[in-house]
Image (cartoon, rainbow over all chains, first blue to last red):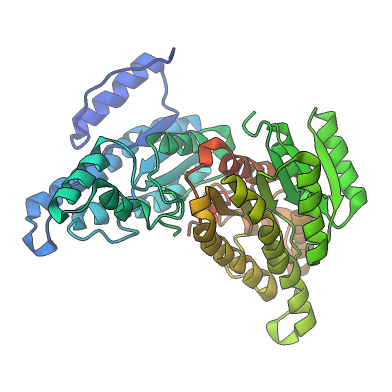
Length: 208
Length: 259
């Protein structure tokens, strides 16, 4: 494809590792213009009353604290540049209830709150901060979920898939490329005056 | 070019944001049908598009008149073979008065253009889009209504009505591959905001800079948006890249509004 990239294994929940990632990027490329905080975990699937404190903390440490640490580490560079783009990948989960997934839903909504306030803290430095909220996305993960559901509920794979696609206006899954396209738009000059938003890329599954 | 070969209608294309949307849509390769009440101003838009190497066609229309709207759609299809994109930008500011001073006629006039006109354009575009099982509708609303705007109740109510129309329509036409979205521009650079700032500066006895800050100060980016910002979002939603976004109201406001 002809693009440049740097491979940097990083534990986002580790402050030192995050600082090393930023240092490595700076020594290689001299600056950071765009940060896409996509890392996240599904967290446990359990009822709230069955969730351990550790399980809860673990989900938040990746989905929220990791984003905080990454953002904090790049802000001095972006502020100095007086420009920058931060895109946090949230989810439709939380906007829509997802029983059995309270930590995931809460952490993904936390990202939205973080982004809105961040946008106002960094706006005067020409930095934008936005969230994108993917809906049910094509790929091995949703395939596995549908297969398991079909088996557990003794329904066809198509029926299981329809439980995800039917509530969406477009009646289909979205693709990973759709999220990438939204990220590129927000990071490009075309998106220069959009900040503090949470953008649903969900085939119409959520509209709020 | 992201809209190459598409046929697009832009209403209210004779001035302001609509004129820029039409230019950007044409620049991205769409044959752009310029619709508005005033044919003369549309010619100016058409000339700008031609100078930039784009293709457009002027069709004066009164969107509050169903026959006129149907003619617009029929003429577009018979001349260009199809309709891929409808950008409902036409709108009026409505009266600036307290609720108790607004006549029923003033109220209805504002809704006739901002809501009923949009409904009529959607109504007569959808059969074409359903038949081809694809289409893009973008309705231009405003951050007004999401945020209160004193003495502009018909405008704010009509602009929120646009969002309700969009959400429900998205679910009516989604299975036919048609997306429907709203774009909500914030305070936009241009002649209109200059006049408002001058008036406010005089009325409140403050400097022009202070009056300007009354608008930009509340936005995260401390700036006005440009008509191009709104046009860029319309293009994104109408391009292949935006195919899985529907039923949304997207704020292009420099962060003035986030809900």
